[in-house]
Image (cartoon, rainbow, N blue to C red; front, side, top):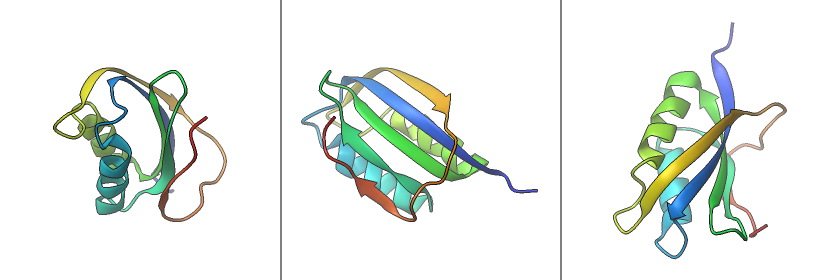
Length: 94
């Protein structure tokens, strides 16, 4: 049985203009996760992370801190279905 999970995160706070997306890509890749990250027009950052449950949980925990200049107020986490392309990429703002 596979322990692979996929989670969608909406990260709110001071998370745009503080290197959050690049930090997210580096963090996800260091954990061996697949997925993507993008800014949202409402000022939040959205990410989808897929991989071993423990690695995804670590990713979510680290996102609560983010890079040094970020200030995360809250993160909404939801289960995500479907497949995710290999690697971790930046998507255009939505």
